[in-house]
Image 1 (tube, rainbow over the protein chains, first blue to last red):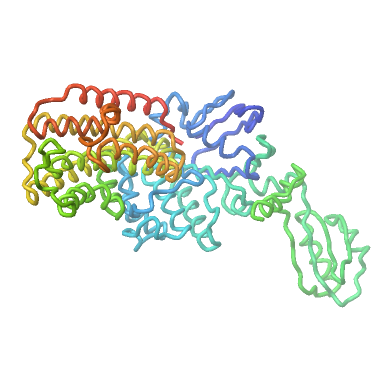
Image 2: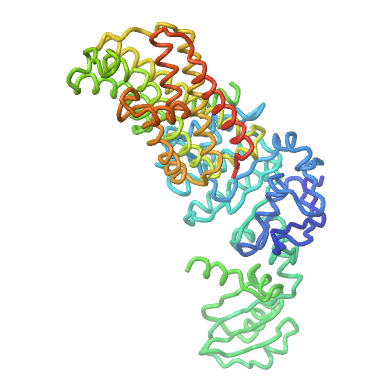
Length: 309
Length: 247
């Protein structure tokens, strides 16, 4: 069942087209990631889905409702964790959930929700006493307490340490397993790759590609690199002659073989036949980052680094 | 429990955890009256310059107007600025509950605080300085709620537009101190020059003091003050509703 259907969404602020003719649909129980650098138009897109922005053109249906015209009905079924949304310093964890629970007809019990989010024992803590990760998880709890059918999480793990990030990822997978549809807005390649069933790559307001993380990488025919060292003499030309291999190079005593997804098996078989045991064998899989680079000519990881510096 | 009830109860607790709010909102009016009565020589004796009134009698309605002005323009705009700055209002607009419910909860809490502060000031006056209880209770209550509407309306108008807690605080302060002046907090209205007193009558705080003082003394409703306050209340609330920014 299609839960979200976006057709030709366009939004302009002044002279800047922040969302440019974007179309996609999201199925029930899917984790759908929107991946792209900051300013790519991801937030504007999800805020339009949530009925917080009115599109200049295009149509949006969420749960068969119009986000603007049927705003009141839609809000009962939508849970949203907005980017940079915080609570008052002197409100307690328990109170935040009591308040949000009072907005919905059949809210979840807050205690199991807090336990699941790793906030057990923090019920009585003031918001200002929580760590950044705990504040973020409380914000997610508030988005979930109304039993939403669709959850939008904008920059879910920005500012979280790696451990908190993994805990949060686990929670999102549990949500999907419960049949909740999740839209994840992120500029972390790894997050989209690990979590998403499908990824929409967004750049400059346009949808540049949409597929499963694996499909995105494979569809572009991106190659993998196999690296190893060996003291034995190796007939590089016979290695290069393997059908799955597209290139062999020797760099600083290391042999770097590039090839298709199946190259690893044929390289390892070849080495075994030659009775060569490779040292420090490593495989660099093509990533979403490579896919983004190949589609836009820009590198997501570099963009992240620029932001931080 | 309804969303408004839950929000209001929660905001009462949040307010109660803020020591500055407790002091200035709840305690300050009664404390001002107490200090005036204890510190100023002759404050509890009838004074010819003050129309044979006692200084404490004059300051009793002033303390109540001070309490209202404090919650309305020194606390409310900063509170609303926080809600906007932290994206709380925007976040509420993604839920089935309109963010104005939170604004109504804040107004309820501030009105409650000012009411308690006023009762405290009246009790301190009665118990410590033997000030009569308001002689015309009905008009006194009407004056109080109209004054609350006018001053909270003013705070709401500032809070409708300020982007942050700090700007709410700053713009609030710009209005707060002149309001205190025209309420007669620094020097009693009775000893101000005629021109300044006239201006005072057209400020919400000055009108509040006039009408509360009249009802306290039992001299009936002061129509012109009531009209001034009602006008402020209507104009500020309409403009605030018109201009209110949710994000």
